[in-house]
Length: 348
Picture 1 (spheres, rainbow, N blue to C red):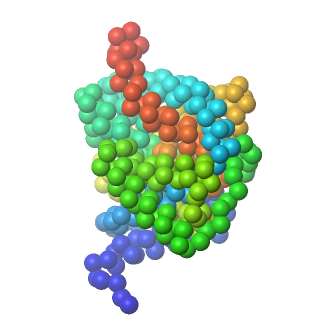
Picture 2: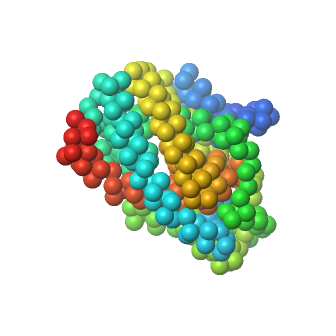
Picture 3: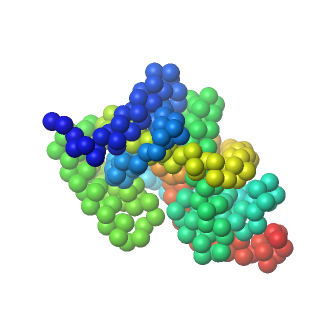
């Protein structure tokens, strides 16, 4: 059986991503399948024009949503519920910390304060672009900065967390792996696709991951999961995510605004350092696993940070809960926080 000719470029791209992931795994790099695939795909798209393989990121997020959702057993759900106050505090502190870093961003990049603010808040690329457009900020600048922020955090956090807290498993936020069986997995996959499509039509942010995840959570909590999601399938999903993420880093994209690229990376490192320190203190005060709280407050995307937690055995449900609460708070608070800062003279 041969692939239709138009599909070969996509197949080649995925092979490059898989090769990068496999090489990273051989070198024992943390989160190898996603990081290796991302770097390999970025190298490919730097030298040649590459189209994004269709449906790969969406399918990968569905698999990850189901895989992450199965971690929420009854006892784990109770532990996550108890951590909700800490998650809310963390979300608010993240937005306020972004307001501080926005001043540095504006001075270094030469942008207005409004655009700098929406460039630095880690609320997800799509959400921040939409909010920036409503607020009258520069959409191209926000898109570029938010994309680079996510890529920088994906490269930065796994090796650091792996070195500081390797496999710091916390029993309150961990559950035994479910065995996989083909019929049950097929049923879950079909249901995951259906729920993701429904979530997309409903306007849910990140429907491809959240829809399947919200399907799996109650099933897991009630002990009704028909099948576990095998590790090899999660690894394939990481390759898909890493490859599509790396394809965003084209030569034209990175060279279109070199000063903004550098400032985006610098501001991400500054925000990461602030949030890591706050998270460690919050974890100590609330008796939550500090490494899990650090990943939960990391200024990266929800799927990427949840996958990092899964790869490092760092309280996956807790990390996912922190990021989900932050996304919800960003929807509600990003605009009002900016308007309050302007009204009080905190920014100009």
